[in-house]
Length: 407
Ligand SMILES: *Cc1c(COP(=O)(O)O)cnc(C)c1O
Image: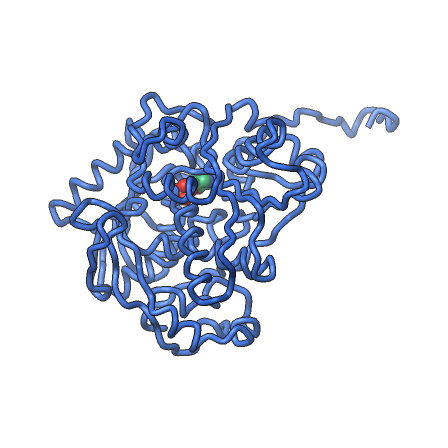
């Protein structure tokens, strides 16, 4: 086993804090949302982290997610769970993107998506806090990651997904040990069922941001980026935004690293990318509002960002505005074109949500919002192999004469 997982280390969590009111909560008991109905954020003694984690010590560790242990909430090493959460590579896409565009390819994580980052942490904490049964609404990838990690630690899971969730997601969730139900509604309709069962005490609610620890797992994307860029940050980040956990998590990571003195005050411009068929955050951003209204009749090929209503809407909007970035929407045709271009010209198979970030980047360059000379990171959040691909219908009859010139 990797040395990041075997050593006992001190932990530095001080308390949890309501993201809206700042009210404090005890760290070592089970919590959902705050009393104000908002996400809870984990707070650390960052001076003590800096004192106990000299940079050479970090540099000497294997570059996986658990190398950040001092900045993560799990107290006891026995509760750490792992399926091999590697540091994901930054892959250039010079033809379809440009000379300064890097794709952070999260498709290489366990269960094929970055939901593994959030769920490995949330499940480890559920284990630490004695949870035995979890339920979750999902558009696919989160349910798969939950199923895998919960099975690993022996926690029972019940997962609800919209009936048109991609078949591969429904099946991987089932195969990895969860009871999965297709529901005739959208993800927030599934969330209502989970909420009702949780209120009756049937299970713990693992909806996005309704427990405090998925953000901490997703935060590692920001920590990794800082390390990969040599303790500087790129000029801009394009993030496909559903519930926004990753964007909120990265923003939190940057603040923590600055408090530790590891990076300066400069921040990337954060672009929250949505599909034009489901763009509640974009609408609120453009209207200058702090919260987003539910988006009716949500539809897009990018299922992972088909989220009509996000509980962390105000946290996404605050981070985007504070960074000098924007919330932007792209249409399905531009998304599919971007996926096609990256695959055909750069050999990198993106998921549709990753395609959305490339489409948004291209549009941003076209309108002068981003300079092609700026260093930009696009997030590809799942492996393209989980999604439908265009047909490849050519066949060859080996019993007939073969026209080799035509091959
Ligand atoms: C969940 C998901 C997203 C959205 O992530 P959030 O952090 O919830 O906004 C984007 N892309 C894919 C592939 C996903 O599975």
